[in-house]
Amino acid sequence: MDYKPLLLLPFLTGCLLDEPTHHIISAPSIEVADNPYFARGDWPEENWWKAFANPELDALIHQALAQNPSLQSVQHRVQQAKEEADVAKAKLYPLLFFNASDNWEYLSKNGLYKAFNPNLPRNAYTVDLTLAFSYEFDFWSKYRNLFQAAIGRQKAEEATAAEVRLIVTTAVAQAYFALKANLVKEQLIKDLYAVRVETYDLQKLLLKKGLYSKLPVYLGEENLEEMGKRVEAIEEEVAVNKHLLNILAGLGPDEPLKIGGQLLALDTLTIPETLSLNLLSRRPDLMAQIWRVEALAHEVGAAKADFFPNINLAALLGLESVKWSKLFYGSSATTGALPAISLPLYTAGSIRANIDAKRANFETAVQEYNDLVLKSAQEVADLLSIAKSIFAQCEKQTVIVDRAQKRLDLTLLRQKSGLDNGFENYAFQEEILQKQLENIDLVYGQYLAAVKLIKALGGGYQ
Image 1 (cartoon, helix red, strand yellow):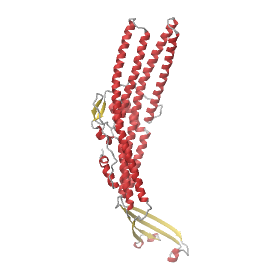
Image 2 (cartoon, helix red, strand yellow):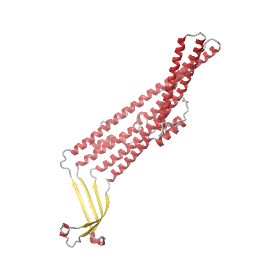
Image 3 (cartoon, helix red, strand yellow):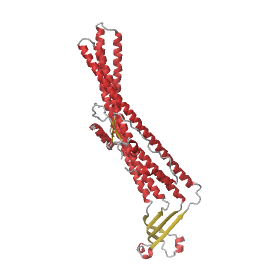
Image 4 (tube, helix red, strand yellow):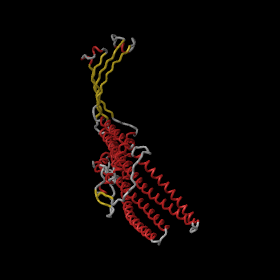
């Protein structure tokens, strides 16, 4: 990682603008309280998804990296920025051109050429072979600043490409874990539907034998229809998750996916030791903005050079003749040197206005950077708080599900002993399934917090 932009940005911009720059803020400190759900360790690796040790997720992300259209598009923008930097660099060197021309012309008998050259034939050729040289002296660093600005834009595009890669890979991971969670929920909801079917059948049987009124039967039928709606809704969610996952991977929405339904709870989240110190250099969006600020500072420096004289030199060396047969004679040689200097004396304020416009763009970029720094710190702090709460709730929910399972087991024993009826058994089955649904939502929340925190920490950007 090149930390030069981070360390030298205030000094660089101050030098280019002839005034100190006080508006660039440093990253706020982020306190991480000790708790059992956070493990101190390193920053995420570049292939951060490997930490989940999930072959299905690995395959989907590799597919996305190879075929996602957004990633392909941003790579072309990086290439464009590189080529534009090479164009700007060319201004720092002398330029050499070769020109060859063969012009045939039928001259007027009373024209200017015949008047000064009466022996020139009416059918005339002008053969010209010329090497032309030009060089503009960059005494005021205009072109060096423009080249550095182009380099800054190139670096910004490279960081933006890393940000797009991070957005795509984390989006794939979120969609994948959402699908896994919904597949588990789909099975649980179908189990709930089956329990309500059994409850409804028992109610109808008791009604038929005259042991039950119609009111509970109507209520059971209503509950069954409500659960049928939930089955339809979760099937819709699963289908939408699959469509999104396929699109992110660069595939058609209805490509078949083989995804297992199990989703185990996470134990801890890994938090870097140097969280506040290195956050700026670890996030590609922040680094992209830093490079934009540097590029705009160089544009201000280039604009100021317009106040000073422009000095350039042009020269040519060649051969010129009205006949091919005499073109390579020494007498056909031609040469010339054209030094030039131009100094703006009165431009109606256009140079100063251009500098002020560039400076305004620079100050805007600085404030956008400051805003991004604060929001980045807030994002990390919020995710740490959310993760702590989610992990604590998930731990408690696991205990709740375990207790509910023990009550269900006890109810089954009591039913076998004739102490409880089937309705109580079905009620406890519904209760534990509902608690398991709450639990899978919390487990998905763990994965979501983990992926979002990885993204907020830069996803292994180097």
